[in-house]
Image (cartoon, rainbow, N blue to C red; front, side):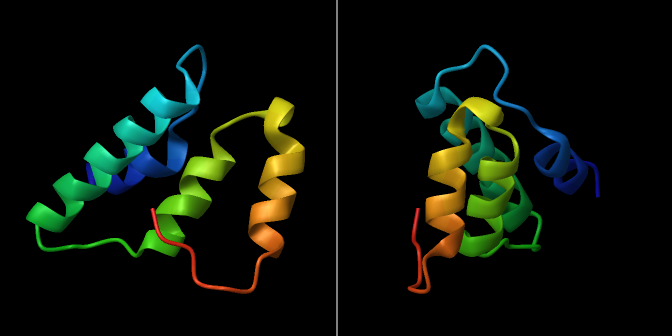
Length: 71
């Protein structure tokens, strides 16, 4: 599906983190409306993959967490 592809390839670019997360959540909501919901964990992993190297420390910390993460 095209939306899933957009989620997987989305990059933060010049957006703020807040706007990047909103964009990604909007994609996930569109998937859900189409009957293909995405788990919070999958959404988070896709968000983190798109933020860029300046957030490497944050990405490593979050991905190392063992508890359930909710967005």
